[in-house]
Image 1 (tube, helix red, strand yellow):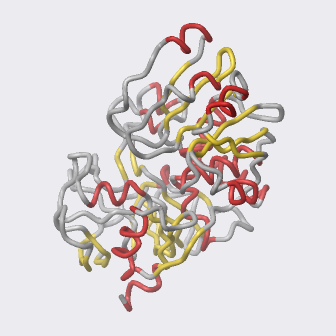
Image 2: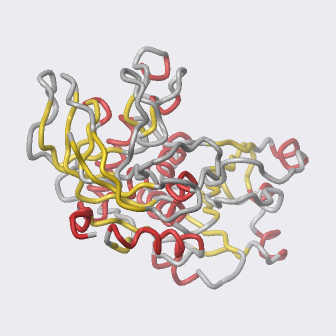
Length: 349
């Protein structure tokens, strides 16, 4: 299938139009027309090879909402015209213990990324959602629930599941005390989802500047992390803290905030962190953990939950030809809180 998109051709140049071939449908494949694609910070990191594993040309995009246009002979779950979605992965071994548990993101052989991956059958590099079409195996295609606004839902496929998964893993519900560090694309979803699960939610920020935003998103309060007195009063006050900060930073100020057996979960920074003291960990039986996205089953659960609770990201719609400006603005945190590309604009880009 011939298609078009926007690709990075090297780490230093702007993304530009790119024509390429999607694979012919296998019996268990679904082909879709992409309607909307979210813009994730991972897209920017990959385009610029910040993590050292990019190839070129590469089409980013792993927050994808579309409409089925063709199905393989063995596909049973979807039909032409269905609204569907694809997140950060398009395949896994399907044989290991993690895949059998519905944790394909933790596949022992490594899951296949929607972009920056290698197809398990033909060995080709995978290309993402900044394009008109996508072909994906049925098992990694998600059903879009009725009532969920397609134009705003795309960021749920990464920002949503990245924050929903630790909330579910650590059994957040009514009575849970949840802190969220950072109020960007990930952080604002963590707030909305934790509130939806019934938790008492606090946003942690270095200044009070985002207090009104935090409260508008449903948080119960904002805690100024640069205020020693306020931080001391909040000691032992959280069961779970979700750290969404996407750059290297200090963890020590936040660890005393955890109650006994509390956990700080890192979902933002990929790479080195500053050295931390083990004293609050040892004395409070506290933990620092990491969490990636969730599995397919959990991602579908998250979409259905968001439809029931009417939880959607705060989005700014852009055209495909505005992606480079969006990248520049994203670096400056100049978006509330997620860009979404209207892929209908691609033909005119």
